[in-house]
Image (tube, rainbow, N blue to C red; front, top):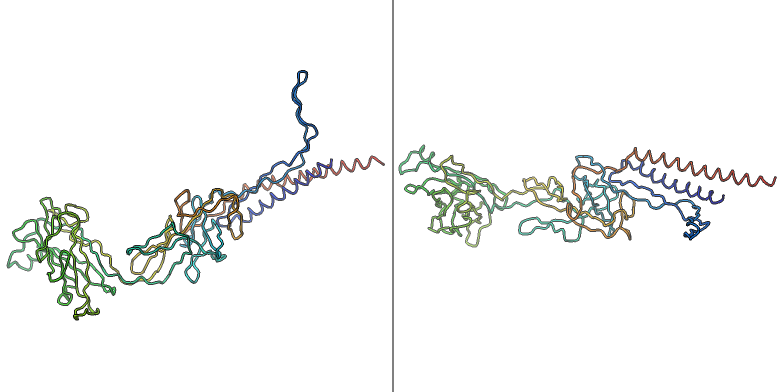
Length: 463
């Protein structure tokens, strides 16, 4: 009789624990990245009244007689199913689609979370604005003019230098991809201005000096008289100030050579070779690069008092190729330069985050630069993580160590900027569990009440 009392008490206590977990789930139904809890019950140890007996020649076997002593909580699990993604339009909001956690730092202590509601502090550090914890990742380093991220390095704070300068870069390469009309008329000696105009095809391309000043690169082509597959190209930088810029072009050097070169095509219209004004012949395979230099105004002179000369490469394309290369075909001329790598100074105006967590800075001069990459952590047993408040988790003895890497690799999910992961709490399921828990609590209370009635009956036997 006393056993039923204590069994009922254990039922009351543990159903109250289940109700506490359900209440916590419901209270966090709108908490970003929250993962619901689940209570599992198991029976407690049983008191054996008699043991089992094996069969004999005369009698069959007898089962044991045991009375259960109540129930207890087997486990309280964190259920890491995917929550729905909600678009917010905020560039610093990030949702994880799949497995993984964001890595946050508070001093040297590491925390993990699914809540990607991040922002920038006054220093441009990417943080969780609710508690100031710093989002971890890898900052990009400049290697040979390119911004590269090493995800093998130790994660560090991510700093977005909003308003920082991107210094001006002089043009070092200009690439051509065009066609010269095979049927363009030759320009004979004494030709009229109209004939010269019809027989010449040219292009103009903006380029930049080391100060970020804009210049105009002009390249014009005309058929060479007497040679059906040869064109003469004339190169000028700032044609209206040509006497000062003194444009020079050549193969391997521009010292002491003019500003013209000859382009030769084969019988298929593919680029064959180039000859500069000093008679130097180009290579017979691979890419053809014409070196170009010009005097930069208002620059520091050299030891001889001459103005600084900027040098750049004009890439005409690959010999024998028809892709991104100058060609000669019987169709309309489309002389053009499609790429140059210079720009003026700019400021970081904005940034964007892609699905792999790479942060790209957008500058006012039109350039994009990689700033860093967000790190993700995964665990062998994520249910073994311990809750640390503020919607964060920490490692435990049974979670395993954090395996940190980039998103989309080794089982880690992908990222979606401008969105947040919602709670995975299902209200209809929680309400149903609440009803079941309430009935379980009431039934255990009835067990205690009935046992009390039995005790009262026993006590009344003396009267």
